[in-house]
Length: 246
Image (tube, rainbow, N blue to C red; front, side, top):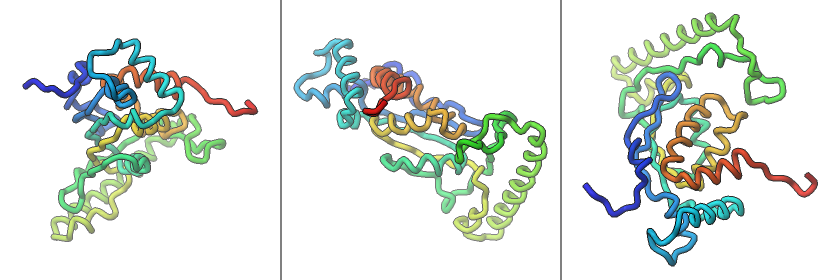
């Protein structure tokens, strides 16, 4: 069926496809509204589609990004379907400028899928970064750590299933499931706030697990709004801002 809404062929190629992240997670671009042209149209409300060259659109988008003009980017939206461990979701939800609808453990039975870190991701606490890992794997204790985690998860799963079968309300049966259990949601966000999310979550200081999701979503954004993606990489990811003293 033909549409008169603006579309991007590169985005249409992956629309509705599911891309795996971590062991049981995924990201899918469910829908999007607008592209780079819509950012420019919002900034220059007096022209229509097809009246500008790509080079002109690129120049304006880079100017907007360089000078931190945000509202034109709010005219573009992307909607994702994502599945992630609960501890990742709790970091993710701190980005409040989005619309979220999460899978409900009150209405539906939770799929008892748990995140299992790869061997190289089991690391000691960083001495310099109180929130992060040191970068040095704890290979010697990996098998024991996995064994302890699996025993805990097996007990949590067994208890959850027993409570559900005993007709305990699902909203109570779920309360002691670990943070490693997977949840999922629909997450709709405008381009400006998505770029802010990505700036923080692709950063090397962000937790590895949420970086894995952010990288996949950045690739999807590149297909929806490639010029905005390019400007974001140049001015935010690979660029820097200096203070007066610096």
